[in-house]
Image 1 (cartoon, helix red, strand yellow):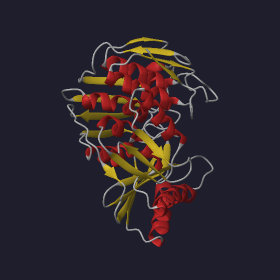
Image 2 (image 1 turned 120 degrees about the vertical axis):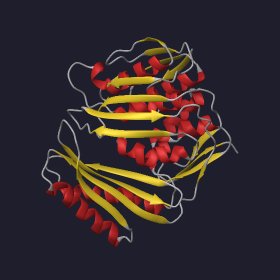
Image 3 (image 1 turned 30 degrees about the horizontal axis):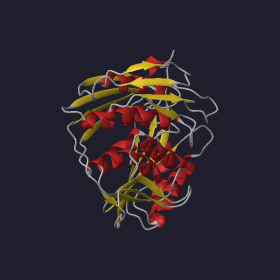
Image 4 (image 1 turned 90 degrees about the vertical axis):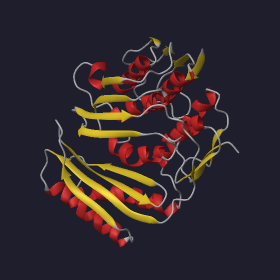
Length: 348
């Protein structure tokens, strides 16, 4: 059984999710200790526990330690990942409601189901647009299109938005299955095409997303970008607001989210998202920091020689690479220091 120290590196939930994904795909039994050991509240939270149970279900794994706040876990796959129709609700992992991220649960099971023979449909309930997690919009508009270039086919239907703290969002994802991932080179992004954006709000006045839209158009227009940014009210059981920007280049896209909160003016929300986009743009790199983190496992599983220039190396990325190396993917590495631009590479 492979031993994984959950406090290594950034010591968060990424170690759990990456280990589960690779355990399911490779059939490797794994024991995780010190889970989320570097967090103020260590152990499994609802979205992590949901991810554990989701992966266990698709590969019929024997699991011990799958409970809230557990800091140790054993996971032993008994079959290869099985395609099918699945439903996972973050609320099932905790008493009361939870806005635990469904995007993180989806990322954990996406590759096992994509590699499994046959199509799958997954319904996920919980938080879709919450802090400290990629929003579902990022997966749909940045991550999935990038994986499309590697051979993966998936479609996402964002039916209900789930914000913190109520959650209650709903996402349905269709995954083709039988994927053969192939290497890709993402070192040249090409010329900027435009910035597409969505200023969203649920159960809040219409002037809030419109002010975000106006401010973002002004900032990005002054920077020379063509923009297509719209304001929209979205369906949700709770209230929430924010701005998502997608910078489309000739060869790749990058995504940036800023969430609103009480006391933060709408214009400042727009400025936060625009600053993140412009910081990425000025590096000249092809891949934004969040996408770079999420490409580690697809790059490792595709084999061959893959490259991506990163606008910023993060501790998440380095920890992700370390986990892949523990499962025998020795050729994956990152050139560069945390906080600086770098290169994610596999093979020679």
